[in-house]
Length: 131
Ligand SMILES: [Zn+2]
Image (cartoon, rainbow, N blue to C red; front, side, top):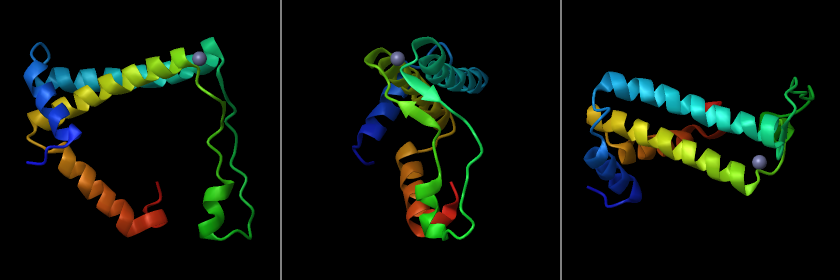
């Protein structure tokens, strides 16, 4: 087994997950943690104000090539996360990763292998993967 930080994290999660060991608890905690990630990002805009979200229709020139598309797509976020919001979002993302890894452990899936397969897929399909 590879000795990556991903494998170490997977081993650590396996050792400490006791109270929510049922896959039903893990799935519901995974869903909850995803909501908390989203909530922390939204609160950065609506409570703190360090970032601003201006969602609107993407305007793409008709004559643009597929390769140029990346330069015309907007993420609708302006500003920079303050240290407090950044810490909160990172904490929530870390918690979310914990439950993702717990799911992997319960289903005997190797997250490092999942990363490798996904990287290979992205490398193979490139921009045509349409993410
Ligand atoms: Zn902030």
